[in-house]
Length: 205
Ligand code: C5P
Image (cartoon, rainbow, N blue to C red; front, side, top):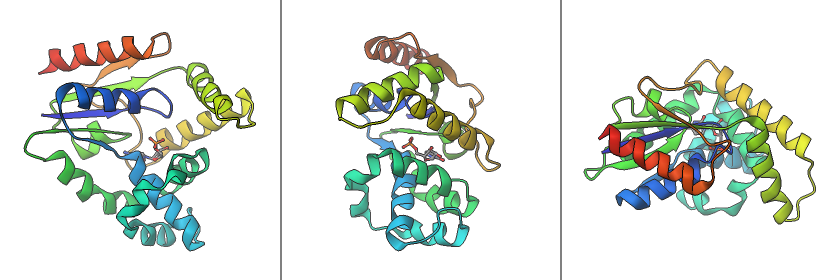
């Protein structure tokens, strides 16, 4: 069983993917982490994330980098969104995601192009979304709790910019995959969103 989960930044897809994987006893791959690792590696190499050659070179990052806490920062998210535009980078990460998806017992993958490109054959496709305001508010609360000094407007602007880049790119843009079940989490608690995702999964199986 392959469960493909896509959606924009801060929609709740990561939380839902992790919880769904635990619920169904499946391994989970957060594919955004792979792009974040490439972004981080370009930075460590002193390269230019907008340069396809520098970005491709960074796809050979060491596996240990996936455990680097820097990967979770907003800065790294921005770098990831820039390197992920290059088709050669996406191609270089394709096989690794495909191998994960094809594990005999099944798998949960979340990202931007799982239901459209990585696993168009998935048994279950979910598209998790929410309004920019709802997503910015969640991000802002998280960052306030961590003591970061950033305004709500700055976060909303950054989300808009990232959405535009992810949805506007030519190769594997973020879009609702054919047959995907859309869950808008703007007005839902985490528990409600997870319940909706479990219901949709059980219905699709
Ligand atoms: O999901 P996350 O915020 O960690 O992803 C960071 C960036 O990586 C996204 O903004 C997107 O540009 C890119 N990405 C992608 N395809 C995926 C997962 C992430 O292009 N499957």
